[in-house]
Figure 1 (spheres, helix red, strand yellow):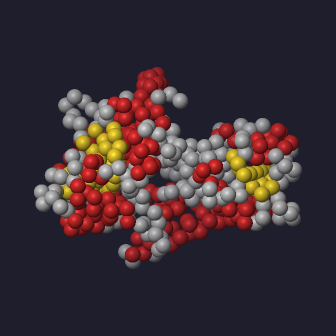
Figure 2 (cartoon, one colour):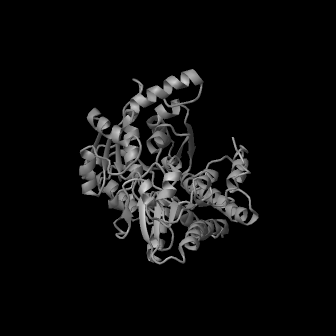
Figure 3 (spheres, one colour):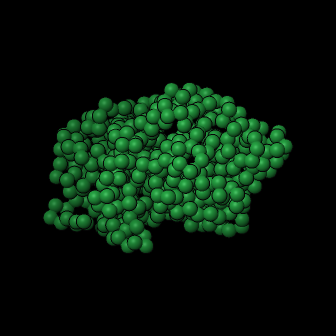
Amino acid sequence: MVPLRAGLIQWNRRARRTGHRTPRVIGPRREERTVRIGVMGNGHVGLVTCLSLAEIGHDVVGTDVDAAKMRRLQSGTVGFYEPELDDALPRLLSSGRLRFTGEAAAALDSAEVVFICVGTPAGPDGEADLTAVDAAAVDVAHHARGRIVLVQKSTVPVGTAERIAAIIELERRDPGLTVEIVSNPEFLREGHALSDALNPERIVVGARSPWAVARMRRLFAPLIQRGARFVATDPHTAELAKLACNGFLATKISFANALARIAERAGADVDVVTAVMGDDPRIGRDFLGAGLGYGGYCLPKDVPALERMADRFGYDFGLLRETIRINDEALDTVAANVARVVGSIHRPRIGLLGLAFKPGTDDVRNSPAMELVRRFLDGGADVVAYDPRVTRDATTTLPALEHAADAASVANDADCVVVATDWPEFAELDLRDLASRTRRAVLVDGRNLIDADRAGEAGFVYIGVGRPAPVPTVRTEVA
């Protein structure tokens, strides 16, 4: 893997040749003062926040209540897979601009800007659980000094800025402490998180204090100079903007999956339909892939949270309920396709390609692939899976799941092979070899990753999502 800084330099050279806007090596100008930053919560978002802010030249101290995580980060070990982090973490630790501590006071007492990046999981009622946010606010009230900007980066309901302000007013120990609350939602994609943080399309800052907005503008000056759009607004708008983005992306996915159900009945190809849609610049191709539906940490919790929040404000956002229903239906459809194939077999063997909720990460939280494994195991099947990044340690909740040494091995004596995560390497598999290993050469492609005609030519019975069965004499091509 090319080190991050060297990689950015290479991107710059390509930019000069091609004229495309690409990343540049960035850092503070001489006249820009380095800002002392504390980051509370060092999971996927918090760690990337630490690394990106240190990369652009600020002094960053990360803290977390998880002592084991702090020891791991202090030693330069990330603890989860995300491209570029393994290179960036030890380099930035060595630079002296980044350190980690398990003591909140050590991260906060000299900080000028504090970021809250703690988890906000879905509560029993579907709304975000703000327990960790509240605890972080208490720590700020107890340990911060002087006048600071407190940046809420976690995804939260509208009104959380006022909630944090009330907690700090109640809990603060230093009468001289002045806290300006800012909402600065993250728009990071797992698998591209550090690149997204260093090359944002927009930086949203919701604040009621012009002083706080000016501080945030200075903090992000290197990114703004590179072309990031700086959007200054109020906290309520910033909080809603993040939930709105995730709700709309989830709706695009569910729209594509609803089209897939129609395509299956009409004998049409949903991939061609969505490609035609995506060529319209008003729509775009992203998030129009039909398949198993969305998963991961964000969308499954943020869509219900937005629906519940709308209900709290007296608006029935039925579109979001339908988005969730169609997402569940997408998984049900693929599971039903597998059941039709293996239903008459006593203790069938199912090979699964992929466990992560998407390629480019080892995250199995709310992974559709993991839910398929649970259903297959509960139905009495033997399941063997391979994922290039997900380890056995991540699947301890499914002890009966077997792990294959490589992708091809999942097909050994399988009654059905299922594509559950669209890792690019799976599209390049030797399908003839894969088919020869199976007991029954059936391929259920839950991500429409495999070329259907190539699968048919290799000997597979191919079942995609919203795609017709391979017809050797007819081939639709999309450039």
